[in-house]
Every structure is written in structure tokens, then in C-alpha cells.
Length: 210
Ligand SMILES: N[C@@H](CCC(=O)N[C@@H](CS)C(=O)NCC(=O)O)C(=O)O
Image (cartoon, rainbow, N blue to C red; front, side):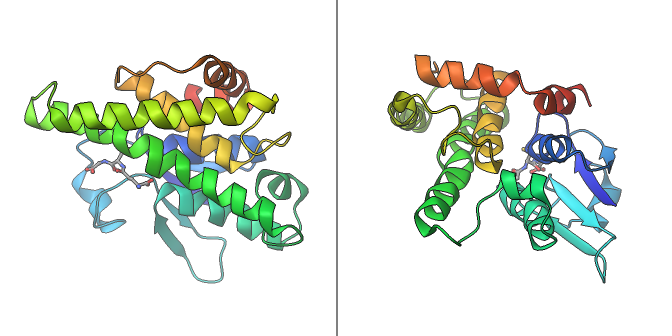
């Protein structure tokens, strides 16, 4: 069984969402930030998400949300599970599709969630509501959202085409984080519609109800 160490609205939301999409049972250990001292025995960094997998030959503990998304789908891909196969993209038979998948999977964290998180942390931990770094990060976010809007202009439903994948979970979480942290970004129209499609998914709804 997979155990997810979970702080609601944090990046562990990505993992709960994936498990709901896959329909795989999981166990939640839910807490808040600052994380409890006992959690440092599981992950000395104290960061969420962290998962443990006690179904593996020897127990596995891992952190980093996108790596976990890849692990949880990857291990079922190896087992030829159809649902997980639909949610991810491997290197064969189409390297171009694999490259696009990996690019947008990481775009969700590196290009979207990280600057949003940095703005939030700056405001909470330094008390500064506006400074040159925050302005710069907001400018970067506007540029990246504009790019995403353009990317969606061919009418695709999901970021890599007609198939919903973990890249959509990665990006979708960034919008949830923006809402939760009240980051003053405006989603361009096609990105806004994409966000509506994401939040309409039963798997998303179940994950935020947890
Ligand atoms: N890149 C990491 C970021 C992990 C991260 O920063 N998590 C935050 C919550 S969203 C956290 O654990 N904060 C608690 C802390 O740093 O003490 C990932 O995607 O998992």
C-alpha cells in the first residue's frame, strides 16, 4: 500500500489526485505546516509530498512530487496496467511524444509552481508583499501562462493532446497553489478553460475533498 504524507493544498495534492485518477487505494497521513517532528524520521527534509511503498520488494520512501508521479505510473506501466499507461508516456514508440510529456510535466513545477511558491514564501517569511524579485517572478509567470495559452490554441483538451496525463496534474496543481496563496496572476482565457476542465474531473474533485 502507498502511504502519502499529505498537507492539504500542498504539492502532495498532486499525488492524492493521481491515486484518485488511477483508482488505487492509498493511506493518508495528513498534517499541517510546520510538519510534526516525527515526520522527520520519514523524510529528514520535512518536505511533502513524501510517500512510502511497502508493496515493493524492500520498502521504498521517496519525495519530490513529479518523481513520485513518474514512479507511481511507471511501476504500473511495467505491470502493463492500462489506466496507468494512459496517464503517462514512455520513450517508446514515440520519442517526440515522450519529450513533450516530460517537458510539460516539469513545466508545471519548475516554471509555474516554483515561482508561485517563492512569492508566497517571500511574503509569509519576510513580510515583504512587493519587491523587485516578486515583480520579476510575476512577469515570468505572465510570460509562461501566455505561452501555455498559445499552446492550447489548437483546441487540445489536455496539455499534450487528447489524453489526460500526469503532466496535466503537474500543471493543474500550480493553479490550485495560485488560488490557495492568492497569487495575483490572471489565467488567460484558454488556460482558464483548461483549469475548468481539470477541476471538473471526478478524480480532482475527490482529491480536494480528502
Ligand atoms: N519540488 C518539491 C517541493 C516540495 C515542497 O516545497 N513542499 C512544501 C509544501 S508545497 C513543503 O514541504 N514545505 C514544508 C517545509 O518546507 O517545511 C516537490 O515538488 O515535491
